[in-house]
Length: 172
Image 1: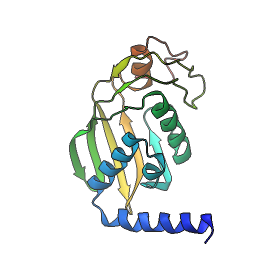
Image 2: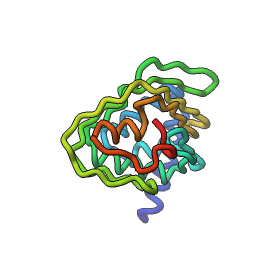
Image 3: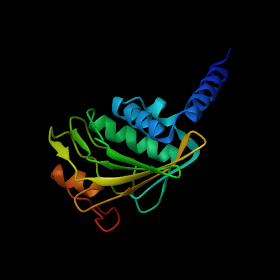
Image 4: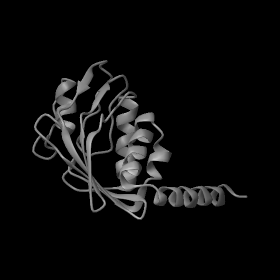
């Protein structure tokens, strides 16, 4: 069996398993995989047409989002969303995230104009932000983050002692 055939089978099995899960369980499993650094497993919970919005001026595709998360997890191996207050209504999961992590690796994300920040060893703790997850067909189709002052990329960079070059473009 070819690698491609095996991967396609695994994807189909994961999709079937995900479809049987409740939307809240899908979100929790996705977040748990992301926090473990299991990017491939986390990506299996995202739909092909997935979009992430709220953190950047333009929505990110699945591949763009995963690339950004790889950069964040390389810089913050202990990254945690600390999700709480789950509420579900019509396939949309609302949760509060209190992101924490320790900056032990270089922060380099594929977002134009964001500088690379060398490891500082500093711990970050962002204020609570609302995350909205839309689940369709057993997959997360959208994530929207309601960024608050001191949150998002602005909050991360400020807590690391750096400034974003374009504060009006990536607000937080």
